Image (cartoon, rainbow, N blue to C red):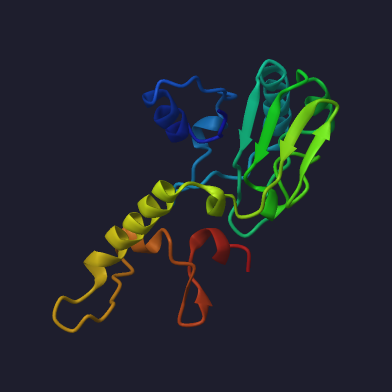
Length: 184
């Protein structure tokens, strides 16, 4: 996997996976205070593209997930990179609903690009097994439970709580999430 945030590297390596990242001075400052990836310079993006091209040419499967809140998904895998992949390789573009991370992805379609299968299913989570749905439901329950008054059943959020402020996009008709409010 690749990501611009150093914390993502730690998380991936803690699971025993190898991490691919352009490590330079800019990458050390790649994460916002809210934990999101910052927009990187053109020079960094060029280094990242070269590293991705070199890496995915050797892979059998590539799963693309890069999203930037409030913006189109960045194209990280171009046509030349796909052409350099081995026949039989697979790209799963989970960002296809926001434009896709692969230049050849098409929403709602599985296409063949010279032997490389590119999967662009919309709403991919809906295709997952029941266990994944149960896990998602449990996560929602565990997120909401602390905010429900035991006696009245009323839902009340503390917007100073980082778990709430990290997921809340709007409040009182105004955009309050820092990644989206900066766009106004």
